[in-house]
Image 1 (cartoon, rainbow, N blue to C red):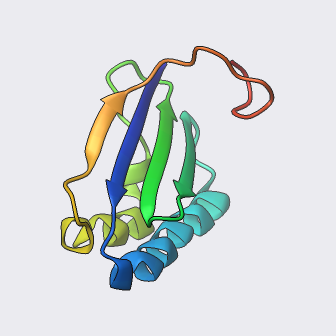
Image 2: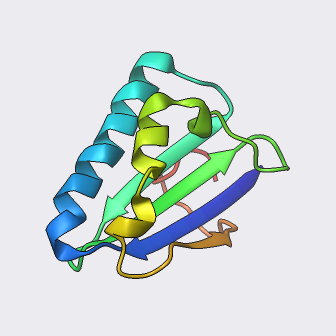
Amino acid sequence: MNRRLISYRTKPELADKNAELVAAVFKELAVEKPGGVRYMTLRLDDDTFVHIVETEADDGTSALPKLSAFQAFQSGVRDRCLETPLVRRATIVGNYRMLGEG
């Protein structure tokens, strides 16, 4: 398993657009149902977005970059951000019914 946490804060005037692009990714995931990936996104009240991605492949490869909605989201993401997205590996220390199996 490979887990990553990606966080960034968007420009206030572009936060809703970013949320729309993220929502489109989840709509495409619901249709395509790719295996080997789990994905969740949170939007905080200061327009910080936190993406939690889990892939079965240890090398971090994922079906996400192949989705057209994800490609649309990625296009211009840095222009929508106040800060460069920060990507970190993550390990589950505790989990109670939040993310499936812990």
